[in-house]
Image (cartoon, rainbow, N blue to C red; front, side):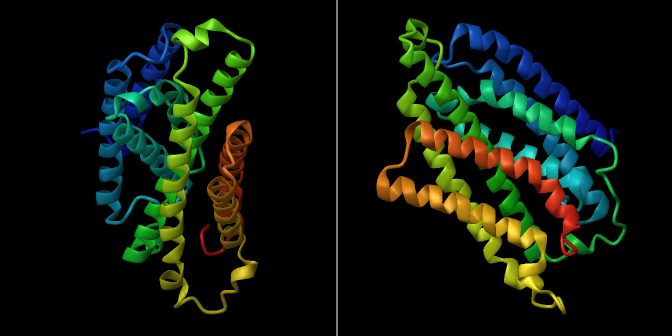
Amino acid sequence: MLTDRQWFFCAILMYGVSVIYSVFLWRKGFRKDDWVNYVLLLAGFVMHTTALMLRGFSFNRCPVNNLFEATMFVDWSAVGVYLVLGLIPKIRFLGAFASPIFFFLGIYALMPGLDHHDPDGEITKNWAVSLHAVLILVSYGSFGLCAVASCMFLMQERHLKKHNISAILSVLPPIQRLEAVAGKLLVGGLVLLTLGLALAPLIVKDKENLVFYEDAKILWSMLVWAAYAVIVGARWKWHFGGKRLAWCLIAGFIFLILTFSATNMMSDLHR
């Protein structure tokens, strides 16, 4: 029997195969309904799910107890969100651009020092803590796919601005579809993040001497929620979109990824 880390490594290899195939798909264009990349990511997702289940059963808890597990879960959730959306042929093109993110997140998770073992697993024995972590990590996966769609939007916009005929014919999906996909993923991610943060009072009610405004992770989470909420509000009230929306979504996800680990380490509650 393979261990959870070995199953996860196999999943990363499958995501790597998807990246290699995606290079050829980029050259061919994205408008065709391509199942090969979808099946490759699905196979990796099955291995990834097996790794998470083995991890959870071995410790008898939700596998989000350290940075290795959290990163592995964010990667899994992003792939899962894509696979659900990929059932719609018009959205399946996202896999070709998202597969490098899936691959490099997996590589990052395997870095030494991230997999600290907590024998008691107190962090995730409470159902509210587990659900809180799952909802928030899945929302990060949605924000990641937002950034992917936004990157494709900027590439298509650049091609069209330069009157590049390949963009019009087959290289990238229509620019309107890319913006619509990014907008829907943005709203879905914010809803999940809101639900996850709403469980926080149930988690910290028994924590003595906890001051919300002194915990780095809580402050960071409130900042992330506020930033995405402002973008959603601006999109709804002032029809905020185009390049400005794309750059905001890319910048937001880069900030999220770069500061996620650091704020975890700075927080006594989440470390």
